[in-house]
Amino acid sequence: MDYQQQQAPPRDGQGRKGSGLGGLWLLLAPAACCGGPLIIGALAAAGALAWGAVGLGLALVTAVAVILVTRRRRRSRACCPPAPAGTTRPADRFPAR
Image (cartoon, rainbow, N blue to C red; front, side, top):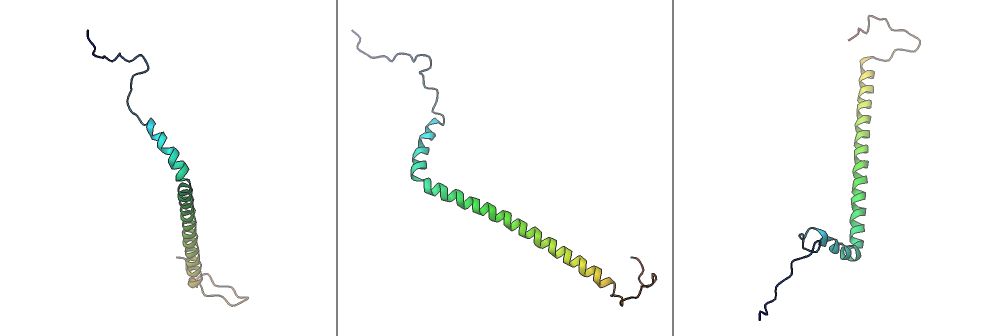
């Protein structure tokens, strides 16, 4: 008599197909339960940083626009001295550039 045990071949659909990443879902449950406040805090901090970056970018664009407008106005005023009230300027006094 032969008392050695032999494993039966796996049936269709019951064989092991590989570990895959399915087991990682089991790690999300403790992380969601115990790490919930940490995750919420991290998301809030990331959102605040993102909105801060948007605000900083808008402030930078506004500052550059104000500086450019101010320089152009100063340049346009510096080339022509103000005329006395009620007088007209002769055309040859200020030649075109």
